[in-house]
Image 1 (cartoon, protein in one colour):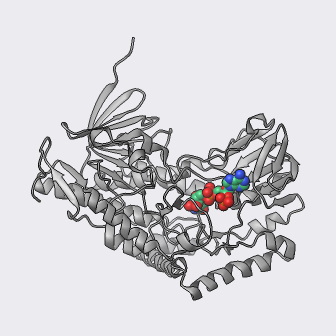
Image 2 (tube, rainbow, N blue to C red; image 1 turned 135 degrees about the vertical axis):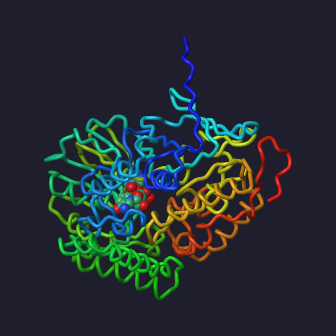
Image 3 (cartoon, rainbow, N blue to C red; image 1 turned 90 degrees about the horizontal axis):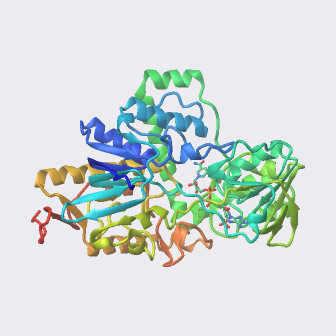
Length: 500
Ligand code: NAP
């Protein structure tokens, strides 16, 4: 017998409990709005910081900036705090802000459907049907891991896992380990593995620009000051934010800034890698910022450990324990670590979401993700996407963007309450014009013209779909406050839009 799904009604349904979902929940709760639920497919909050437990995981944005402005933390241990500390911060946020009662853990969204006559979203999990006026996705770009399609991988006789799904039951000491990739995750993992592996092979398809990591622990005196004087955290946050903004000129490809960025990275490479042959392999042939500029003081030294081999070509095939690179070189390995990134360009959740007339979000996005004001989508009423299309920054903190978007969404909700409108939806024309303006703004940036291939750009259309191609403060100026232009606001079942 099929058990009917339990129906649960709520005004606002938030998907995901990372920085975006929790931040949204905090702000609703602080306004006295208790009519919301947060669905989380895993057993705990934290998003990417819950998932990425690999050795060496840490943030490459300074912690006093990579945290909520409305929840400053005087106790960050370091400039760039380790992953578990960020995860604790998010767990404390959920607990201390009273979000636990709103959380529904282990609830995987399997289907979401807009019902126009009811003016409600219906979201299915394996055992519940959630019915909500507003659906807010906070699923991030780093939720679903990406594996390259490697012939013979199933035949691998050793252990294999993704960096975001680290298998801590696998003993790594003394093993022959292959790390695939040289992005932000890999450069944190490789130094840790070089300490314990008997042999370490790093498969590098494309070298990254790497700059020094200005890392240190905060002294007890500094932390006392932060505790006694919260203004000092605000001042530090502002200094870090504007320091980040200063590096945007490089992303705009302004020549002297581009050269300065390149020099900083290549000087770091020269100072850490004396061997010209190795240095050549590690020198990028594209402009800095086209792919994420990485920070590390330990990656290059780890590559020069006696146990490490830099294989400067892709992992191409696997046969049993033999792993073959595109160069033809073969290695015998016990463990493969896939630091190969995430399904960021084509987020899997889009296939699950069905808007007006059954329109599927992934169909709407078949030429790449897009949203009006980077937050709402034509054909998908009362849907808001935090940290969705054109929201990532290559040069500053995503938490700043998330907070801007939360403010916009709260403004939209207030506007609807004030006007009595039940349904909000951007017009296709407004969405297209916004997308065009983003693309116009992206022309000449390192992301489009920097000579690399990256997941910031949708390969199907060549559009920059992940990144906001401007200063961080410009995002808040443009998209941090709700405005009604470009929207249709309707009553339930109203055929004509209500006048606003
Ligand atoms: P990523 O930036 O997408 O890097 C994936 C790497 O895998 C790239 O080097 C890619 O090479 C390589 N790769 C893919 N298939 C390969 C193959 N067959 N053989 C060899 N190499 C292959 O993923 P990520 O390092 O996980 O980083 C993703 C994002 O997470 C970052 O941009 C950042 O936003 C975030 N992150 C942040 C931190 C932090 O400290 N805050 C830490 C980790 C991650 P190509 O370059 O040639 O494609």
